Length: 101
Image 1: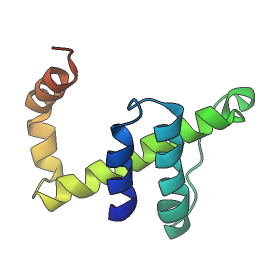
Image 2: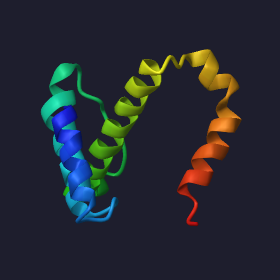
Image 3: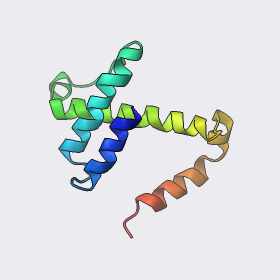
Image 4: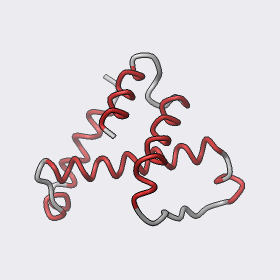
């Protein structure tokens, strides 16, 4: 998984973070590595929308990002209580990182 994520980092120099190419690459990582590990996650919504391959890729990319975030949070010693009590500070830091400077 780390090799595939490193490949994403290299692709970032050529593509925008939200490009279809990068989203498809992240979705591919989810399908190849995460999806076979356990029971399938059921996503509900309008069938017409969920049948769109780009929407499917975006959902899978977000699932990969969430799982990766949870693993990294745990690796640095984060826990549920810490997340609950530091939520406002984390939100402000994320907002600052994402704001265009």
